[in-house]
Amino acid sequence: MAVDSALSSPLGPPACEKDAKALQFVEEMTRSPYAVQERVLAEILSRNSQTEYLRRFKLNGATDRDTFKSKLPVITYEDLQPEIQRIANGDRSPILSAHPISEFLTSSGTSAGERKLMPTIKEELDRRQLLYSLLMPVMNLYVPGLDKGKGLYFLFVKSETRTPGGLLARPVLTSYYKSEHFKTRPYDPYNVYTSPNEAILCADSFQSMYTQMLCGLQERQQVLRVGAVFASGLLRAIRFLQLNWQQLTQDIETGSLSPKITDPSLRECMAKILKTNPELAEFVRQECSKDSWEGIITRIWPNTKYLDVIVTGAMAQYIPTLDYYSGGVPLACTMYASSECYFGLNLNPMCKPSEVSYTIMPNMAYFEFLPHEPNSAGFTRDSPPKLVDLVDVEVGKEYELVITTYAGLCRYRVGDILRVTGFHNSAPQFHFVRRKNVLLSIDADKTDEAELQKAVENASQLLREFNTSVVEYTSYADTKTIPGHYVIYWELLVKDLANSPSDEVLKQCCLAMEESLNSVYRQGRVADNSIGPLEIRVVKSGTFEELMDYAISRGASINQYKVPRCVNFTPIMELLDSRVVSAHFSPALPHWTPERRR
Ligand code: AMP
Image (cartoon, rainbow, N blue to C red; front, side, top):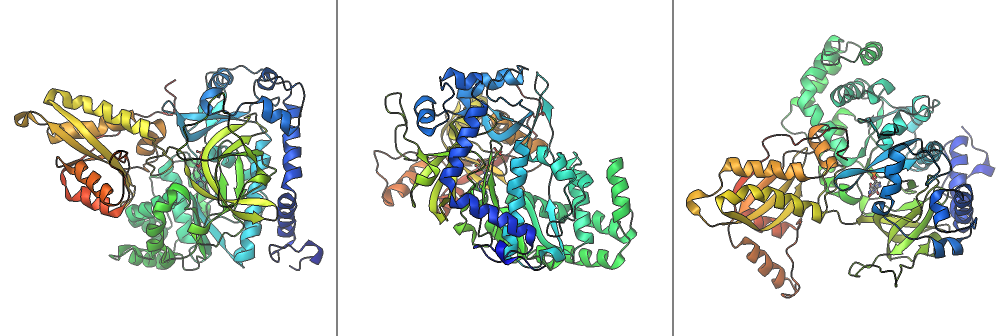
């Protein structure tokens, strides 16, 4: 379709008029981030001026930046916990937001072992939808012809619960996929999925994955892009294919759906899609039964132009495995978002993963940046932090993201550390550096140092009766196998060799650690099958001293040396692994239910 030249974009020639409008919107937003941010803040503060929260800080109706910054404190989730608990318990008064809280979004970030509850309001769905609507117009600038085929995306809904006051609590993507925005989205030739809504919306993860894979196999020639939200999710789909290709190919061969798919609406939907195709079945069977699965993605879906998965942040650990299975097709990281707020998008999505920068869209929320000084002692009442506005960040510097949202979070620390890489027009672009305090992560789980410490302490109670203690420990997220799993290296002090802990006891220690980890970890183990059993590797006594010697030989100071609680540097891993005397895996699943413990 010819595009009106008045709508052409500095980002490149748009693929169609709809794209031209989206790109023009990106241009407008990024050309005047200062004015957009000023408007956003004024809107948020004026509509919420009568909320309990803003009244508490005596803004008295002011909507300007200076008053806002001088009166409102920078906070974390823990500071808001009492207000959130009241909303969860059913208090419908305007506590944080003048608009009614429509539901809670359950973050993968945790507080006291449970997922954080992020209040949201109905209109936030429009804002999320708006950001989604910008992704394909940008992608179409780099990859032509995406309207000639489909996307094979593995998308899932997860379990939802209700708070004591009756509000739904569920992950942001579950909320989005179940919304009319997604379910009744208008046809867009550039954004057609192989997965029918019924498969995406099926709450049973096996049936959902099975039917999404089956549809993807059936339409293998039409598939132009393969994706999931995070890299770990796409690898889980590959693993699923490894485990289930026999049944899948049988279904394709006979045209009849496996009896394992029991959901009636899904069966009805698949009955219309599934066709007998013995040739395709034979092809898939041959590919899947080969010894090597190298390049399996492009062997089965030969027209794949890119993989659409987030491989920035903790997900970077999966890049080599994805390259192996895809034969090296480009990896596209398109957006940066969270339960609290959707932040922005990658305007150059076909760049290398190490070069990904996200442009924060100034219309999504009011953004501030806390200069990140890794070794600073923290902030006190007398030396409050000096936050920088979106337009004032400096290239090369690192910041922690702080947001003020339409749903009522005010100067809220997200916990993500970002580095400024440059600007698009006047809007800064950010490299995602890491999430603060995350030691271990396999999928959505995020385990920090304090949680790991607590888990080791709890597990080591089981060693007491053997007169044994854990003298040192460190950890490692092993993602060589799918699903990945936590490895904890333990150096033990066994005081009574005749009564040292057995394999069975150490296995129970693995389970005790898992029981102590947060609910996102346990959900990954139990419901999502995205994390494998935790492993304890017992190392020879003296190993951690060797580790220190090694660090000192590489320049660490003896006085300041601290045992790293997580390792991923190959020589250190090799040293540890060469000293392993025994390895033990968790023998069972830890406890997990969708209900919160508190
Ligand atoms: P959640 O609160 O569970 O929705 O998780 C949101 C968090 O996931 C963000 O605050 C980031 O730490 C992480 N995240 C989201 N998008 C990206 C991305 N594109 N790259 C790296 N990390 C991301």
